Length: 335
Image (cartoon, rainbow, N blue to C red; front, side, top):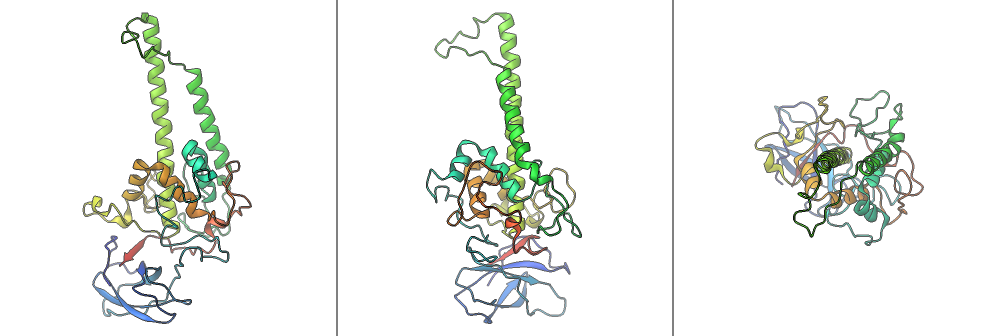
């Protein structure tokens, strides 16, 4: 097996979460060798076995004297097996493809919300992930700021996220209505020239305000989506698999910002990857829909447009059920 470089230093003494793709269907206890950054180590198949192509996580600690080491597994389950229920959230890989927007049909509430009123489903996803309306991850007692679980919660700001984003949406809509832009006759090429000087001034000012508000509103939700996608990848140990060449020699595990370094431009406090930015920029509908499908299995749960999480009978901790602190600190994909 060879390594797909995801940018981790072999000099670190801290465990690196290495994501391994099973080369074949294997029973529990079977061992095989994998190579990461020139170090060969033994991988033991976890309880329950694996099927060909399934991904699971092993902690890798580079050593100066040994090139072969036993790895105790941090289970990375196949889709629909993490936690106790059939509707649990998969780790290590997205539940389905970016292009599976209509997997549950074009009239499914999650798809319609992403298509017709994306801010609402973004607010619902932020609430599921216990993030604020500024894309900040809420904090927990006895934990680092970038914790990937929901135990001993002390920060309740996420409960107001849906309300706050709805208020932003309403405020934006009201401003756009109270600052009217005169409509020009599209069939008259001289319509603007026929306006009086006062009308031209009003048209210019109001058009500028509209453009500025639209740009600010669009950037706000673009930023929320990038931070949200990066958080999902961090929590569920999903490494970037595309756009790695755009790092131009940099370390992809550090992302383009974040990495828990206190960078205020990345309010979620997790590494934001080039892939996150590209997906949100070029296909926001597909990206939003994929995040919604990943955090809830709509085959077992009923979607709705009218509550703060977009699904019925949702428990506060569902998004973090079974997540162990540290597992999501960035994965390295071994193929």
